[in-house]
Image (cartoon, rainbow, N blue to C red; front, side, top):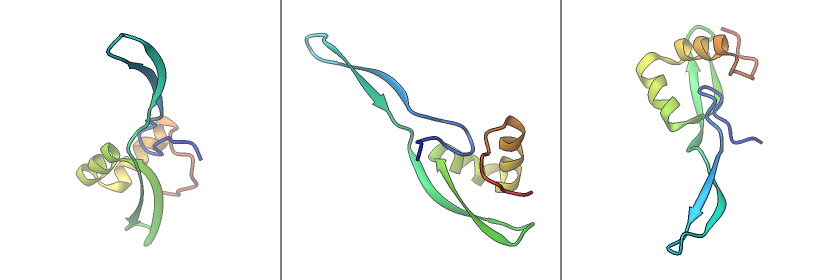
Length: 83
């Protein structure tokens, strides 16, 4: 599975390892993704999403249903979550 946050769209970035001798080799920066269950009160059911820790903080602040509406409007939500 791809390392992409299902709410914010964060994904792997690439960059360089730089040694003391200033040699550069390619490397990857992975987002901090967590598999997390959220309860949808309107539907009365649990959903499981792979989200970044920043997305978890946003969900705690705004609420899961508001965040899912915004993600769906941006076209980031790939799962069949009916709101």
